Each structure stands twice: as C-alpha cells, then as structure tokens.
Image 1 (cartoon, one colour):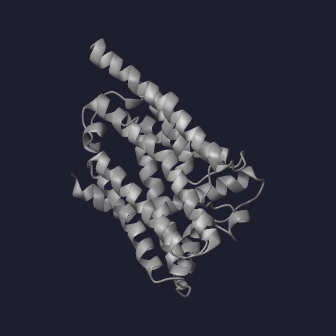
Image 2 (image 1 turned 135 degrees about the vertical axis):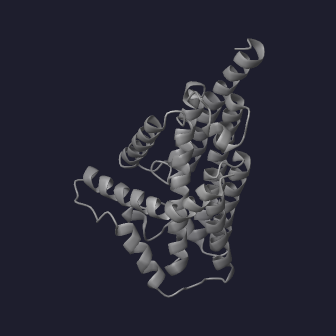
Length: 287
C-alpha cells in the first residue's frame, strides 16, 4: 500500500469534500433561480459548529460519532492507498453502524426513525457495493485497489451494468433525493434531520466532515471504472456528480419501500446480470 497517498487523502479530502459541497450548493441554487451562498460557505458552517457549546444527550454519543468519523477516514485511506477493497467496504459499513448507534443512543423519536431509515439504506445499497467489488475482481483477478487501478482496459467496458447499478446506490450514499431518507442537506428538512436530529455543535461538525470524506471516497470509486484513462475518468466523475445534483433538484423523496425495491431491482437486474455474463464469457467461452 502507498502510505503517502493515504496521508494525502487524510489531509486533502476534507478540503476537496468541502469545495465539492460548496459547488453543490451553488449549482443547486442556480437550478432553483437563486444566487446561492459563497463557495466556501460549508467551511464557514462547520467552523461555526465547532465554536458552539458541546451538548450531549448521552455521553456515548460522542464515542459513536468519533468512531464514525475515524472509520470513514480509515476506509478512504485504505482505498486511496490501494488496499483490499473488501476491507475498505467492511470499514465503510462499520462506520455507518456507529452512526446508527449514535442516533439510537439519543432516545429521541425523530433520531430513532432516522436510525431505522439509515439501516434500511444500508440494506439497500450494501449488496450493490459488494457486487461492484466482485465485478472488479472478475475483471482484474484482484481485490486490491492498486491492481484494479493498474488495469489497462477501462472496467466500464466489462461492467456497464454494475456501473449503472452503482450509480443507483450512489444517490442513496450522497443522501440526495429521491433517496434522502435518513437525512439530507435541504433547508426544509433542517429542523428535523432524521439520523442527525440530536447531534449539535462540534459533534455535528464531525458528522459533516465525515460526509466530506465519504463523498471523496465515493467519487474515487466512480473513478475506478474509468481508471485506465485518467482525463476521461475525471470528466465522468464531474458529469456523474452534476447529474446527482440535477436528480436531487428534480425528484421528491420516495418511501423507504420504493427505495429498497429500486436498489435491489437495479442490483438484481443490472449488477447480477452483468456478473452472470462475465462468468459465462470467461468460464464457458474462455473469452
């Protein structure tokens, strides 16, 4: 593993993630006919959170949210260092379990519902993320991100169905409509924010920073599908994020039942069908 890349991720990801959040707000405002906040507004907001008094419903909340941030950072550092993709997914999932535990520990009805919805989202997107990792293994014969990055042919040429399926769950992971079930960044949902309702001050600031780390990691995952051609990969990442913003501003939130069905149908029809074709070509036809 490349330790330098891991260190660069730890240092630079909050900066990049914050700027992406600022661009997101600016583009969203333009789509809604508004001027929008300054590009650096997300940094100002988080700085204000760290200036506020720390209010805890229960002491365990602090531990769970710190663990959430730490495991998000670890999963991203392992990913950008070229580590084992399965270990990355394990750390990523564990991070969100800590977020759910933090919400449960508040004993608040809004926080409880948010935690329940966060669990549903984990159930919805986790199969597709694992299918993506398996698809990359079938093409490169390795679960290591460094080996996947070194593939000479873009993975998208082998995994178009997996890529479409991953885009589906990416909307869930970026917490954008129509799948922003447990929390979102829209103003009309700021009073009752589901899983983060009972987090405030520096604790909510750590949640926001973890979200920045998470977004950079997810965009890096998109990059993997086109890693053989870096300029194209960067362009695709930018286009995908713009489309996510467009979808976020076009569709209203759907029910958790539809979210679950949609994610699993995409995973089943697109992801598994793609893996089945890959297996047939490699093991039966030896292509």
